[in-house]
Image 1 (tube, rainbow, N blue to C red):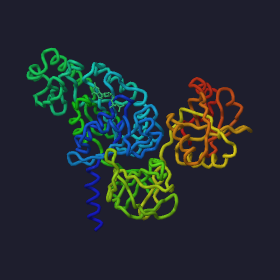
Image 2: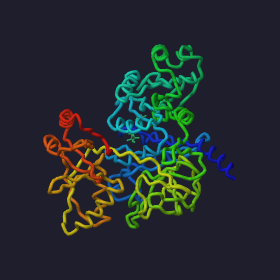
Image 3: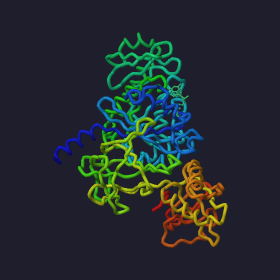
Image 4: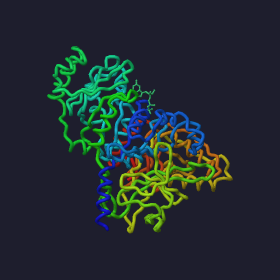
Amino acid sequence: MSQTLREELKQEVAKRRTFAIISHPDAGKTTLTEKLLLFGGAIHIAGSVKARKAARHATSDWMEIEKQRGISVTSSVMQFEYAGKHVNILDTPGHQDFSEDTYRTLTAADSAVMLIDVAKGVEAQTIKLFQVCAKRGIPIFTFINKLDREGQNPFELLEEIERVLGIRSVPMNWPIGMGRELSGVYDRMKNQVELFQGKDHSEIEVRPVADYNDPRIREMAGDYLADQLAQDLELLDVAGDPFDYEKVLAGQLTPVFFGSAVNNFGVQTFLENFLQLAPAPTPRRSTDGEIEPEREKFSGYIFKIQANMNPAHRDRLAFLRICSGKFERGMSVRHVRAGKEIKLAQPQQFLAQDREIVDTAYPGDIIGLFDPGIFRIGDSLSEGGNLVFDELPTFSPEIFSKVSVKNALKQKQYLKGLDQLTEEGMVQVFRSAGIFEDTYLGVVGQLQFDVFEYRMKNEYGVDIQLARTSFQFARWIVSDKIDPTKFRINSTLVKDKNDNYVALFENEYAMRTAMERMPDVQFLETAP
Ligand code: GDP
């Protein structure tokens, strides 16, 4: 019996690819996601992901604030089958208002696709998301999008990726022309040319060639582009990094694909290569050591809680990443922090925007659990044991507001809400060390403040006041002896919810000066 379960797990795990797309707003993430889903047959009408982004439809029970802004407050999951693989795409909000949830979602991914606009190159939000992935050492695949537009020289882009992100790259294909001259891409692995044809570039034709000097390329693309291609690829062969799969898996080398998502050009090749190269669900660290996905006993952890999806019912959805074993509806598992057995009765899985009840699921899959308020971010669930997965990383806040309650009579509810919402990971709280206690909230995205304010009002009946401060950096202070007077000069000293000292700085200069003046003190980006 247990032998067969192990076999089943082995097969299911091998099929799974769970990844996130990381990019800066407008690079084309929605468009690419939609094309990928179309290949998987997960959605039948082009534009439905787009429509979801533009205006969440009337039947949507997403929280009010999300509807008002037409954006996804928290990330969701999309899944589809393609070429024998079971694909889970973790959606990371690409908007200005991203939040800590976006970062946490990345912990549930086994690899990432980095989407870059050929004209804009590596942008701010891409850098932040990349760094979170790089810290975990997960493989990163790059798709350079909008090849149908005039963009930067491909060599310059590769150089920029290396300089800004510190990762080497290996182009898997190479553009033949760009913008109006774009005639296709050359596939370096298969030695074939994918031609971009038709008046509106609507047709794609694949032609095998001997190598990049094949005279047939000249016939297809003309002398000028054929010469350019041969020159570029010769240079890459000599000076570029060779493909090294070990390095790809270690996150040290990113395979790069060129294409155009909106024209569906290069997307299929990208998908097929990606599914081949991206890792299946990987082991996760826990108090019981590394947990292999093929381990028979079910385990997983919660990386996100979506509150108030339906304001009328105040229900919450906890997103669980399955790390090992087989999930079966109705099964009992141990909620380790709470120290009790719970029944997983109404789990949901996600397909584009529709949620459906799921009966079985495997490592790498994400399921949504109905949460009557018993879960917290980072909670571990396990079958027959008390294993606890490594704590989720925290992220250094970058935006800070002073918070206060408008009506002093509501003080009690205010403190309760503040306590619960910070416990949940909604915002980080800091309190000044002086006699008159000021409370600051720290976030990575403005959206977190808006949601916090909304939930304080709707769930706790408290109107709060948020006053933006000019702090930009928080550093956790580690030192044998802390002399608060020393911090007065160019920072504000506060304490986090666990009473750790934290210095808030208004700018990098102030932070650097403080560090130089106190060489014995450690300044950490996140809580020790
Ligand atoms: P997101 O903000 O990253 O989700 O970006 P979207 O998918 O919404 O795309 C932003 C804009 O870029 C939209 O107007 C898309 O139509 C456009 N876009 C996406 N892919 C391409 C492409 O390959 N070529 C061109 N020219 N435009 C594209």
